[in-house]
Image 1 (cartoon, rainbow, N blue to C red):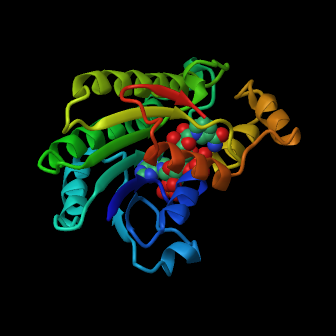
Image 2: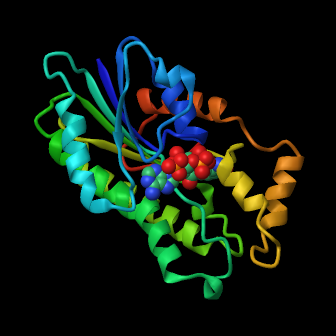
Length: 245
Ligand SMILES: NC(=O)c1ccc[n+]([C@@H]2O[C@H](COP(=O)([O-])OP(=O)(O)OC[C@H]3O[C@@H](n4cnc5c(N)ncnc54)[C@H](OP(=O)(O)O)[C@@H]3O)[C@@H](O)[C@H]2O)c1
């Protein structure tokens, strides 16, 4: 059995990943603030686990991770995987127009929560001598900088550096946890809708998001999820790298 711990399964890419991870030899544990309305997930056989968590509340993450690991049957586990998918794109504005509470929420959900989750994942999985991998869903926004996205870009650049550094720390030992950051490309999700629907006065780059939608440049969540699962379970999951798919 392969165990998958996945954050942010209510919609978008996380929901698509969850749907595709439902397989006979997979056990999916959704770490999600909002329960999905997706019937494939609700009626999944075998059942999937839901552990409710608001990732703004990082003090709760240890309890949730202990609960998640308590669901693992030690007599039947061949791999454990953490996918840090949940994120917020706001604030979308020039930095002087944002508020500290927005900055804090962005950096907490996008960077601090994945750090805490990865730390606990490595600690709690130490006694499992099996394949262990962490996939951090990052963004090319770490490199391609747009006005009004400084906090989001900083959070994703931080996530990439974190993945590289922990990858170096884990190394290539037999019991190492492999950590990779991935840039999944532009996906047709609520995050994109939020960005293109902002008024241009507040978010100068809204037009760019509208243009990529109009030109059909957004990939479907399902197609991206397929590529990410292939990466997660395949041979190209190279320790401590940032991979663009
Ligand atoms: N869409 C793109 O073009 C694009 C491009 C590059 C990278 N990405 C990355 O891909 C990942 C998925 O993004 P998406 O496009 O699918 O975004 P999305 O549709 O906005 O979904 C975001 C998910 O994160 C969850 N989330 C947000 N705040 C949370 C919190 N405080 N606690 C728990 N969960 C929380 C949401 O749950 P709720 O329903 O509870 O809010 C939702 O399930 C993100 O890491 C994003 O940065 C997206």
